[in-house]
Image (cartoon, rainbow, N blue to C red; front, side):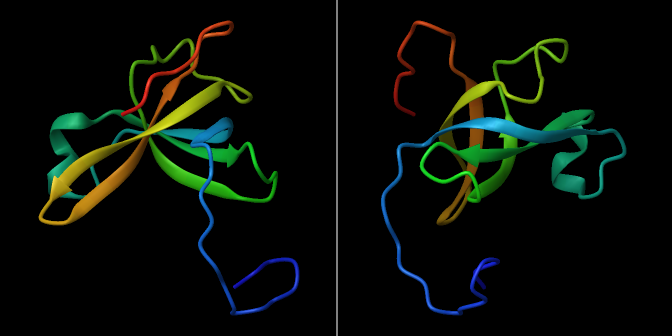
Length: 102
């Protein structure tokens, strides 16, 4: 549902896969057994570059915990998590450099 107009209608549009960290949390207790070996792990809420109201949740890699901050520029990549399942993950985009694809 669109939070602005409450419409249930939707269409898919391509986006750049870039954004900024809007919020984050570090998960300490593993909620699901599949993530037990990753704990503690950060989860980020990323605001996409194309629309400040469009946000996606995912993990973040290649980022030391002391570097993680709100406003950090990130690029998406997709982790294969099983048969037909791909999870969005994020990695920092260093200023002045172009991020490579997944």
